[in-house]
Amino acid sequence: MPSTNTNTRSERSRFGNALHSQDNCKPILIVEDDRASAALVRLYLVNEGYKVIVAYDGAKGLALAREHNPILIVLDLMLPKIDGLALCQTIRAESSVPIIMVTARVAEDELLAGLDLGADDYVPKPFSPRELTARVGAVLRRSTHEETYEESETIEEGNIFLDMASRETTLGQRKVQLTPTEFRLLAYFIRSVGRAVSREQIISNVFGYDFEGFDRTVDTHISNLRRKLQDCDPSRMYVRTVYGIGYRFEVT
Image 1 (cartoon, rainbow, N blue to C red):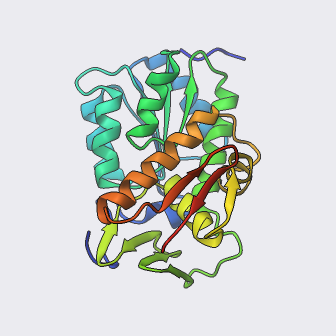
Image 2: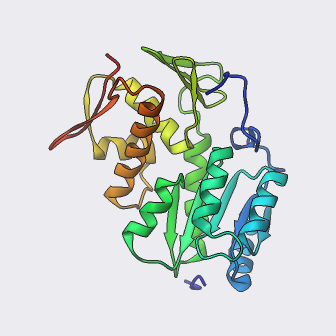
Image 3: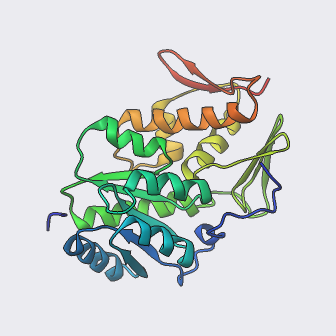
């Protein structure tokens, strides 16, 4: 409990395109079996102007996610019926909706396992509801912020195509299902193609000044992106580690 302190570009995920619509009718979904905790988090989010729906087990959480098309999911890992990691994996296979994990587990490897399955951020328990609300806002800003790009803009580099309006990625003729974080990473890498970039540069340009995760969190997101690109094109290593500096993106 918290403390008081590959397909065509025209395809859409099962949850639709609510993430980028800024539609105030779309809710945030809380999946949390501790009813007091869920009520407190809901109160803080509602006070910030969000619409909120709540599920108290993983099966109901999956049903509500599919029915209500949420703009973000706050997901506890310890859930009845379907546990949080399995639920995260199922949702991520169907949608790029941002997911923030909350968990009483303190082992870094367990938290990183959730990121490996596609979560965008995590908040360990006990946490301040005010902090969680701030993290929700930060993840939504990172997920929906268009930076300096027009909605119609596309980015192409080699055989990779990014549609900035729909947030869809294709590699060759195959669609690559990326999380919002992975999409921003790829866009940043493409703009920096051929140059070595440090972890600090990646955090500044992709995660933002309010990022508070482990360094390994960044590495995990990059590893996931690398794996997805190689799954589509095993002949190339798109993201290379530059020892002592960071990473370099290559398309040749």
